[in-house]
Image 1 (cartoon, rainbow, N blue to C red):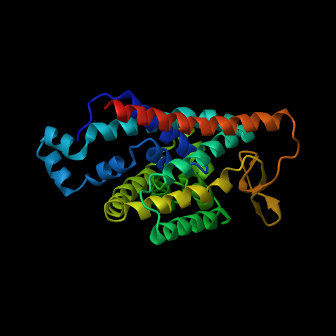
Image 2: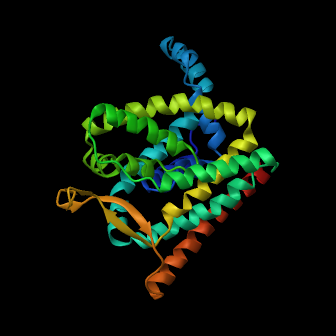
Image 3: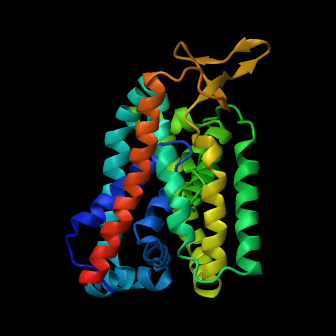
Length: 312
């Protein structure tokens, strides 16, 4: 069903997805799933097929809008783009100055998501438990991989776009973290966005669009045929991604031939090692507060969604 033309909560959900996709370790797909728009989002993306193209070429705008759920998609996309471009600089500042606090907030956010996503599985049996374990195993395996080096080749950026967008729409798999593994997080998610570098952004976006439409068919089919197993798999993804978000970590810098790899005078981070808090001082308790705040944010979103469903 086509949504009304203006829906502020929908734009805010898109902004939440965009904010999540900027953070390495957080998936926009997770936010879409816990805010109740995930399946509609996938089906709407999938509707951009040959029939939609024919409607557009014949200037049948009304039919095109209804067939593609256009107003729903454009508002989610608007919120997502607004968040990515407005928050890129803010998150850069927060990561440089308050990394533990921002990691703590998202750790709490994703921790609570495990419960709320998992409880939507209507029947836990052998197949759903196995799917959960597989998802958990894949996510843990991804977190221990070491990243590649930075590469601005157009074909590599195109491939980055395909892989990153698939990760972004899969709950529990972070597109930003995958970009770190591919070596291009700083290049694409920070530098290119802040500088609006189209030479970097265009091939990446082309890959993202193609990957998004193609993979939406797979996800839509899985949701229709194996919904419980798919959600269980995603719950495993989300739980396995928690180690990436552990607030207390030590940066390990990229090295080549015994020297640090730098860009614009800044050492490039290869990956993070999780450590225990060094001091249980006020910094620790502030981080703990942000973990609780992240948990409460998901509880609030869930209760708000439930209240709205009851009213409707």
